[in-house]
Length: 234
Ligand code: ATP
Image (tube, rainbow, N blue to C red; front, side, top):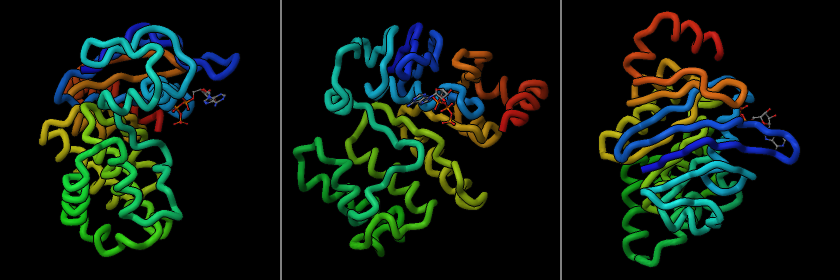
């Protein structure tokens, strides 16, 4: 589904990612682990087309270089960004409708919104309230639901558990596990290695802009040395 080769990402004169390669197969959940500043968000930004990048990013065999952010969304990339970035002054429902903004099937968009309200009744109860009045966990659910409203082929999740209470973190991981079970293709960025590996098929460890280790989530999660290294990073 997603094939990245020799990706370099720069912020002005600073190169944050120094030539990484990674793949996400259709229907797989792949996690990109690593400490603060490793280059995880820079990688996500490059996939979305909002960062200065070189190398190749292919989605379903098509090269995305030179493709605009809007066209990448049209081609099936959706992101739940770091910090959630809910439109805090817009209602919960308007946030979801914006997520489906590229779709023309209006009636189906409304049905999908109602489905999310069934899945997360708290969002339904607060459908007319500003998104900014939701708790952190509710905003995270809304951010993921909003991303899915565009009916993407691949969902990029940037640190969805960040800053949430453990009970809420468990709910967020449950939701991701459910999406995976439903066949969604997911690239997950996380610092919470233990929980992320449990719901992932394959993992990459990014450090200082380079991939330091990679392997199946089962192998990496089962390696005491690796887990000590990963959890030591958190
Ligand atoms: P975090 O979890 O803290 O977001 P990360 O792994 O996502 O970490 P990035 O945010 O991609 O890491 O940052 C990688 C490097 O690029 C860091 O050294 C960071 O300071 C730098 N960087 C990121 N964004 C910018 C920017 N807009 N301008 C300049 N440097 C940046």
